[in-house]
Length: 454
Image (cartoon, rainbow, N blue to C red):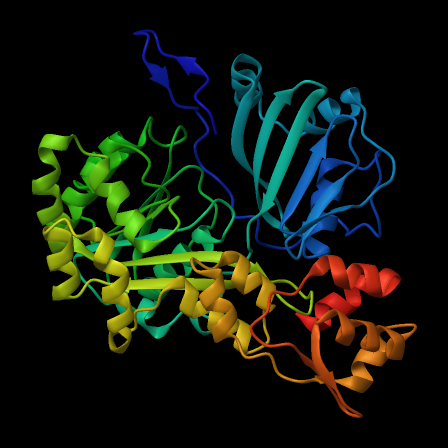
């Protein structure tokens, strides 16, 4: 929700209606069998939920597009006109959000459909008209054991004081990971949890904990105000949806030092960079003090990214985990952040793991392809050496291609394959698969063959 007015003193004013709904309950609408350019926004969003899409993209002069299993897919061949997209959005846009959008050209809020959950809506004006991107917020918080997170991540929730940071690129599932950890606390501790979010995405149902959820621009004017107010609300745990500026980071560090457990997210790619970002956000003259504060209050960093599965059935999270031991704390205090990766290599007994370790494990289990692991690794050449490519069933290979025996012979001569026998196909070890060669040889069966070789 966006600020849209000022009071008689000229201060920014919050909307009068500040209570929200969960989107749970008995559905009011039927699930459509398909959607088209004349469908309502509710019908499109409900259909997307039914299709297990993660995002919906609607734009002027564009077809309806869903993101499924990590890839964009056009759902319609016909496109939406500028008038159609504006009418589609206006039909559900609250007046205060609409007024703010007209003034600023972009807005973000959460839309709910009874029985079909919550949707994070981002709307912008662009050259051809309006664009809307809707993220489908999970209706249920995943169980920890179903996420693939290492057990060391669960252990971090047992701290009564300190700071836990979750990082990764946009759209990698940080919000879901944060929710999983908060829900573990909710189910196992008797504490007061205060969340500060922009916007509120997942709605928590109190179990053993008391939970207070606040949304920026709906319940409070800004993150700094909300954090300061939270410290007077007798909190045990503070949850900040994103630590993005000096003020919020300062308050989060202070809260962690004064006896609270703080959980927050940041858009950083690895544990070392996350720590550097926190420290570097402070003025240079304060950074030596801040390093001491971080070394004492930081409990762990969880970094993640979503990787497409090899079988095309979806995506899976790869995790990097830093647990702040005394040796890691000393590196932070001594401004030796560059050595943290080495400490993580030697800290496996504490549950630490580098992103490359996670990628290697997923590739060797045949969950992700060797190519995906190498493309995302910090050292692709080393990753290629670590991944063991198992033999491929020759019968399965032949099932996927129209001229399998000829393709096998050509791949062997080109150096892609080491050998093939009556029963097995073996990819040449420690080599990077040349997609161009496979495409030239396999032609119409290129994608099928490439998938099985990877």
